[in-house]
Length: 135
Image (cartoon, rainbow, N blue to C red; front, side, top):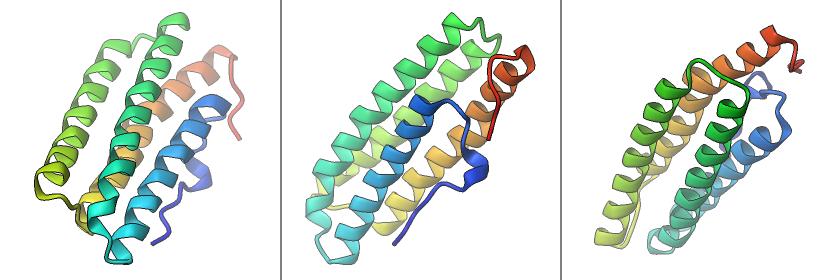
């Protein structure tokens, strides 16, 4: 399928950018399995996606707290919403023993929306403080 992150979505925070790419890579693993007609095999990588997403959110929130980010409370709520949506997709996958291409597109869109609606604001905050130079 070929999901990818546009360069404009690079935050300039290596650890966070690497995690975003890893999430997209897992999205592509699931999409490739679906394209190959192996929908049932997409649930384990989806579970890995959820674990990575949880870890990513935890690390990101800890970084925001260390940096005194004023949008942290909203960002935590945003992360909780994203995890609920992702868990719902996984629960459906587990119950039906398969996942659809539309589900995978939704997960990718969730990652993109997290970057656009939330993470870029954090990067702008760091840039404004002089703590970050974005690419």
